[in-house]
Image (cartoon, rainbow, N blue to C red; front, side):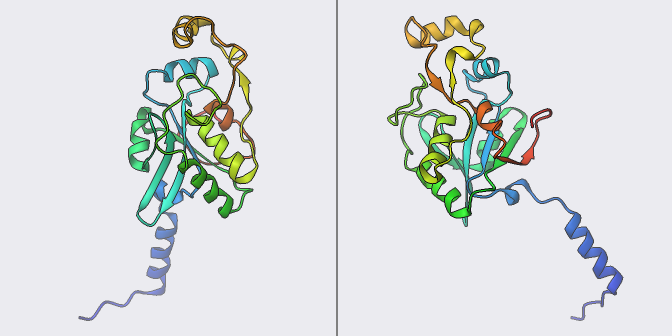
Length: 206
């Protein structure tokens, strides 16, 4: 079979079209990226109200030859395909942040550290022990252990907007709410200027 010859102009147009075509989101991701979305979980509303942010869940990306995955602290800590993780968020909207100042080796080490906790239960009381973890705790601890970098800012529970959540918190903690409890929120992680925006569906963030 003889294929028709393409003129130089045609080749240039084809190259330009290929270059201009947007890359699929999964193709833009790298191991170690932090991905955020608005969770559909029962406590998502409370987290958003307390932090004044649409971001209520975060996980770490792992890119492999067999696909793209997210390591996340839910019940239990697990590793799921990125497409499944993205679909769980409200309207499929996500924010992708990258610690570009860290080499790939350290980003990969952070994901490996997060995977070390696979199977552990979700921490509904937002403690800081390793026997159970919540999503933003897993992300912060992974980078702290692997790269010595603490992303986000620890905050007191009482410094968040929790007045309207008092009944729910009293039920969760069995009476007295530990307002001095220090925790890390998805919103605090996302506000760290050392993390670069790779992709965002959220208006007004960053």
